[in-house]
Image (cartoon, rainbow, N blue to C red; front, side, top):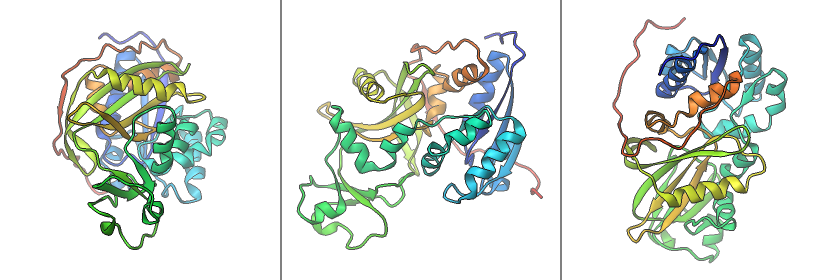
Length: 328
């Protein structure tokens, strides 16, 4: 595709950049196609050990999202570099950004953070209850204390932190006796679904219109992130995405959800993420270029979002390296 004849400039901030090189490159590819001059600021607690920070235009150290200085220091970077768009990448920072939208708006910075979806997705028990209430099929999910006190559960079950991410602290319990006797944070017990695991990436434009839904089957997973996947159209997942969007007050931007299709065809949705999914690069290569569409929105250009992505696109991830001398 020939780049558009524009002279727009957009600066984005990739937050908690870590290893998100493919996501960064998706934005750069979209900018080239749009004819946008793009500057990428990448932040991390340890940018000298972040591959994405090494290939960004500028990198900066910021404290952890739970640190009171996180918002202040990130907002200062937005002021310094004229950041138009912040792209969060990990779950722990989402609630922090959601409560500070006005701080960044004053700096002219949009954050890809839907406060309503973040509130619903941050706690896995709240997520399951909300999805069930709007008619989305979910596995039986209870607080661990409730199961201990006799609330029903179907075994085997997954035990995981209510506010966890990246498969942290996940275990399998086959009976009530397998539940941990003590825990240091809120935990949920969720019916274990057996079948094909899927991630579904969806994009909602700035007017709140669901523009595309791209499921991919998770053929191989490492550390909670897909490393082998293939895109496939599954109408039932489109229905789920439409239900989610229709029940949000002001949806916008990318989100993803995870689901299992059991052998009998039954679907169970067990997680929502109010951000780019870790497997988004597969979605981008299939032609659903969320990054490009977001850049167009930010630059005030026409957004050509469509649902004509390629079915059967596969992704086989491998380890690559970024080389360089030690940072000062």
